[in-house]
Image (cartoon, rainbow, N blue to C red; front, top):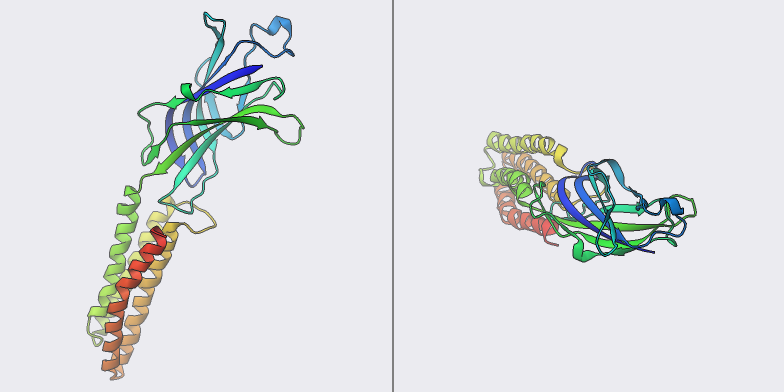
Length: 290
């Protein structure tokens, strides 16, 4: 027998990068005419698809599922779920990433050879205004199939309800990338001081290093904890390396000036001034463009 399935995303509340989960409010509708042959005759009028999420963490039902019979004989039931769902996030492009959030729903009391789900994209959609901030959310998509939970050897009818969410970059641009750029530019000012002014060069380089460390400790709690590097990680590591290189350069040219090798120190400063900005621009390209 065939059962039509559709879904409406009522709200997307949060996407947790650190916890690899999302919180959403979802309504799922099933429509059918016949019931599986395996259902006893005294239960045929009350049969409805019994469903469960494979990737649920903590959810609650917000609507008592009541079977409604339409004039043409079609039966329908609507489930509404609010809760947290686990998801697989690919954060390599963070913060320029787009994520696919998936609800993995299965009909648990009927085998796939008894019930065949049919997607109804024309009845699927989302609320116009969602509660989530910092993401652009597309329309949900349905993909029906079969699920084989564990090693039970039973295949169940299932449907994946997926939502594509694109991260808005403004927060990370103004709260992380822009301040970090200012710290790096502050460190580069050591190249413009005479090498003989050792205290001034070392003070600026040291302040840049300490500011960078304090800044990173502040923002680290909002960054995803993963084993691979993201685009933002590449930028942060590259910026950190540049700041420490300016610190080392300031110490070296100061040492040269102290040993009466002022001309060599000035030549290194000129080369550093010419090379710094192209290197920093290359870092931007590596992190956010390539």
